[in-house]
Image 1 (spheres, one colour):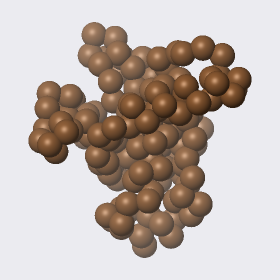
Image 2: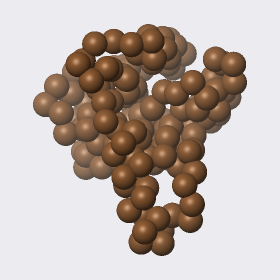
Image 3: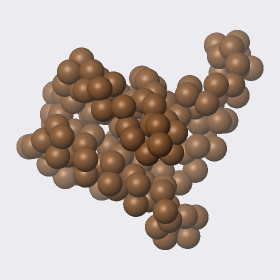
Image 4: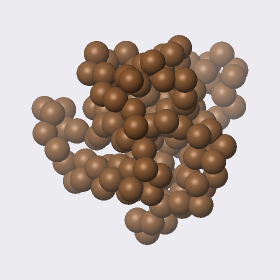
Length: 152
């Protein structure tokens, strides 16, 4: 069964050195929304927070943004994102998909600025932008023809 035929949610992560942005989405609708942020202290992820999100949303799969260089090559953060994805897969026994996240931070900042101009966002807050970046990663992954891999 392909993930796009699935009736479950997908959690997406924007991996950073101090914070993870988290978004939730549904493959049937192809829509996503910013959900939360998870703290990272000295390289250690707050797994208790992620445990709570997984219990609450019961995702069928995860998407992790891969921070690639502009030319598509890997950089130091790419390795951190891949390692986080491997930990997710082992911890929750679900499929982890990777998605190119080039330009998502800039797009998240642009969307946040637009929300602020409309009055729906009060001030620039890094956590909000991280979660919004995760939303953009998931929206991009849903719209990609390469997301045809199967769910567990």
